[in-house]
Image 1 (tube, protein in one colour):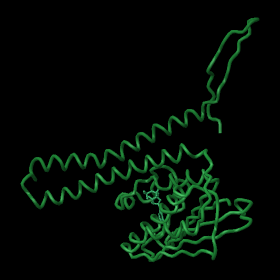
Image 2: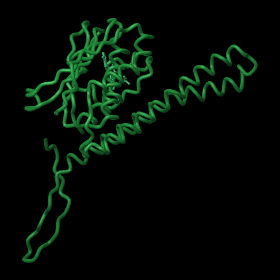
Image 3: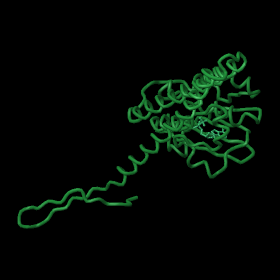
Image 4: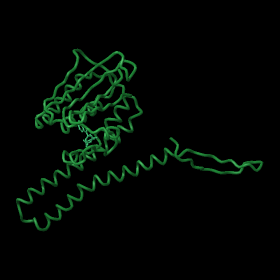
Length: 264
Ligand code: ADP
């Protein structure tokens, strides 16, 4: 969509004619606006825990200096805030890496069911803490594809972690693997991985924006759970790199289903 045209050069050419060159800068302007928004968001996200840290340091240096119980409590909060900053910086670096690699096609041969099994195993402690049953429903035999093992693990970790964190109140999270020789969306051999929860779901108004950086459907809950708001943005870039698709469906009050479609 072209919203503005900008004349970026006027020059005289021989014979008295004037040559004007036009360049569509819409995308340039949009990109720099996005960059400004991003910097503003990052600054805000970092400043919030930093302000808390500075406040507690001041209190510990002053009024709470000799209060052992308060010191203990404040140090715990400070450690949580420092962890939040650390997670944010970690996710920013991941996002940066996956964006810069987006155009390089992954080349590894990998087996998806095994990858999912080991991802689920590493998330079991989180699920147990949240009293959530984690189930893998996959066909017998290997499901192979070409991809980036570490990046796909990150995709499924983020989706399953979200399902546990936001949808875990439903008691169970199911991961389903559905390979097919001719997928309707990919028009060829593909595999679908569905992460299904039975939690509160996501209101339809949020669905189109869910993979934007720092977009949160429930801001309060995300912050309370230590979310950075970058998980699904990272997921989107990795899936793009694999020429795949991400679909989100949700029935409010009944849960959410995130489907990753990967070509094989
Ligand atoms: P965050 O760090 O906030 O979890 P994400 O990018 O991973 O960031 O997710 C963006 C938002 O999408 C979350 O803040 C949450 O509101 C919503 N969300 C993601 N997964 C689910 C889910 N399974 N059920 C309900 N809401 C979800």
